Image 1 (cartoon, rainbow, N blue to C red):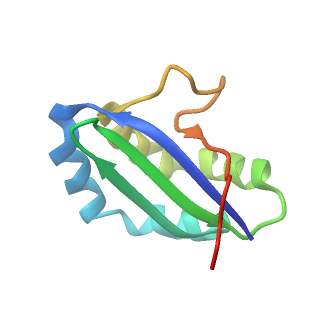
Image 2: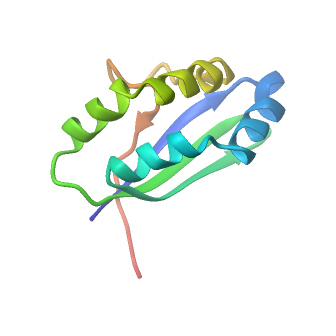
Image 3: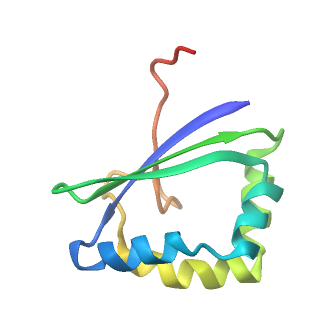
Length: 109
């Protein structure tokens, strides 16, 4: 299992919409997340900075392949057409990233 953290900005005027979407996340998208070996997925919001922090645990063996499969899923693609306009990607993210991935520097159970 690999713990992963990521950040992205959120447009202040879209916070309510983003919360509404996630309060009613589509079952097909949740199933795809599971199928992509992601568990314990959580998104936190920090206001007034308007930053989202995402955390998940990856239980697969080929993250790139699992993410490629997720990106090909039509229902996930449709979901992203709803959520992406709410987000404001960080300028410091790596090429090809929507959410900026973070380095784990500490963990304790």
